[in-house]
Length: 96
Image (cartoon, rainbow, N blue to C red; front, top):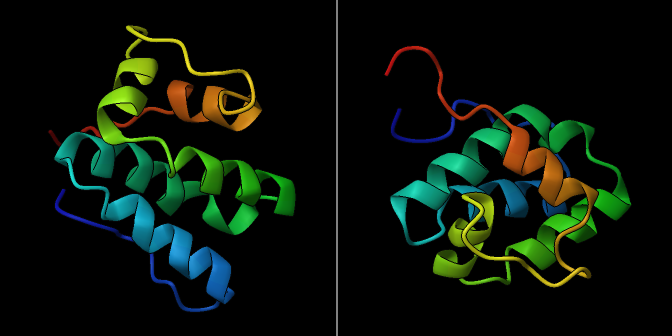
């Protein structure tokens, strides 16, 4: 998979921006983790969850990847319920 499979059609500007940012992180690993999560969930996230996602996107890729793989702990104000959902989200699509 090389990028988003979800159209941004029908999304508000904030969600469109976040979808784009999830797929354009700077490292391929984070693109796949956050991008696939965003493809599946962006339309269903609450305003509070969108805020949590925006906060997570401010964390640099190496630190965020280390936290997702369990090698680092993020501060509590960053690693909330949405982070736990992202961490548990299956990134493999079965075609790899």
